[in-house]
Length: 532
Image 1 (cartoon, rainbow, N blue to C red):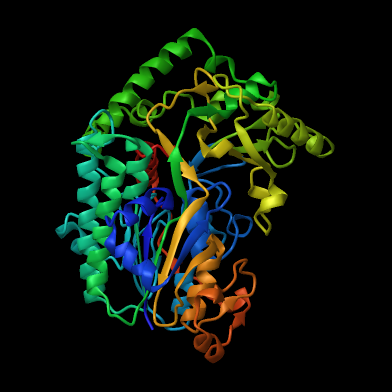
Image 2 (cartoon, rainbow, N blue to C red):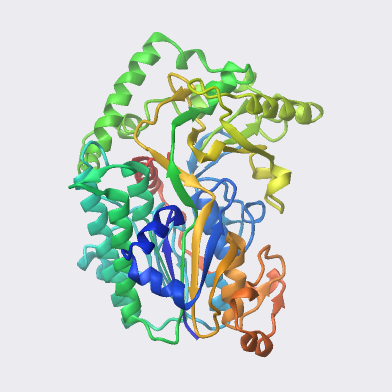
């Protein structure tokens, strides 16, 4: 048995269903008619790092330990991009397939760098340096270079929507051609590709028209053609899964959490981050950042060669001091970093300059939650925050300690939440005009699959279901379930669910952690995409 998983990062039924009904996405429609489909509920918050990691491990973030695109060093307070070693040595689906002699092929899988040394091949996606070794085995490097393969767009959205749209479409087409070749050339039992383009197009071109056509709808239609190209290569007996890690919708405004925490009296900034000189410096850096967003990556890498060390990373940041410099940690009780509504209590013992006693923790957390409940949109007077969670309510496992103490979902997911500073806590959208919500997509078709349109799937259900389909054991501490409602009665009767202890499974080896140059490039790439 073989399975192909096609990840359409950020795909949402909100856009897809009307297009399908209009006959504009025939390939997706065919899969839906022949198989089962429904909503995939994302992680909380609905973010690429959390969701894709839970999808391939079958466990919640409290076990795999990934909570954002970045992680904070508890000794220095510096924030750096996550990498494969952030995964808490948690077996992923490729590890389990390999442990039982099955071969895998992964293309453009996000935030797994260095690529694991799998039986098969692995091409890392976003969160990898395009100039580094992002493919395993190393022989793939030359193959990819010859085909002009790349991970990232060569230019940012800037004020050129048509050029950006065409660039992302071209990048997607190149990746598709490489995928088709790899499907034909290599032996594999599980093939998994993730296309990132929908996420980028929706973030920046939501409600933008190009040549009289809605850019987002046009890109969905293009992705349907991409799916069609892959389906034509595949054998009829294969299982096919199409899924996304989260959904999408338009935003009203952006919120800067550290400004709010400062306003509420829980956070203090350093003097140097508030003075006139710093504001002037910030404006200069913002100008550099704005210009940088419009330059192709190749131009920025060329500029970097001729600038003093560190200058490039400062100019192309978002115009703010990095958090570890901007915050006076000796007087800060609560802070935020990263993206999408995560708040941390500055505990003694956990952080080197922590000032909150264990006895104060719950009272302080309740105070901050009360502030969030009372937070109103200055323009409409309506609540900004919908649901608020303590970490214990949504996560569990050996990495719970690393989780944010408070997580919240904005009302209707119509606000972009940043864990940073700006000139005000509330702004009209600048750059990104749409963001993630909880409802992704899930479609599965195969010989053992029923027809149904009533599916309700979570991120942690995907790995157990795929393992079961292939007759492989499900790890005992996986949080998800086998989606038996999509399987035929005959298949269920003939196949038992096998359970194994996590200690029985070996992990794929990886290469060494990225060097300083690779880490700088990863930071720059994620910053260009708006993730940092």
